[in-house]
Length: 90
Image (cartoon, rainbow, N blue to C red; front, side, top):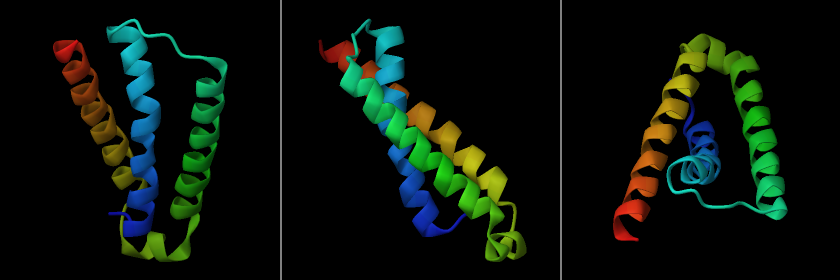
C-alpha cells in the first residue's frame, strides 16, 4: 500500500516508540537531548508521510493512508517487544 522508500523511512518510528513505552513500562528517564532527537524524528516522519499521501503516484496505486496507519500500529507492537524484553532481562 506504500512505496518501499516510505516504508523504510517510517520504520524509524521505532526510535520514538521504544523510549516512550520504556518510560511507561520500565520507568526509565529520558533527558533533554533524547526529547530533541525524538522531536526531529517525528518531524521527519511527518514530512515523509504527508509527501507520500500527497503524491500523484500514490493516489493512483492505492490507499496510502491506510498503509501508513497499519505500519505505525505495527511499530507500536514491535517496540513493545523490545521493552518487554528489556524488562525481562533486567
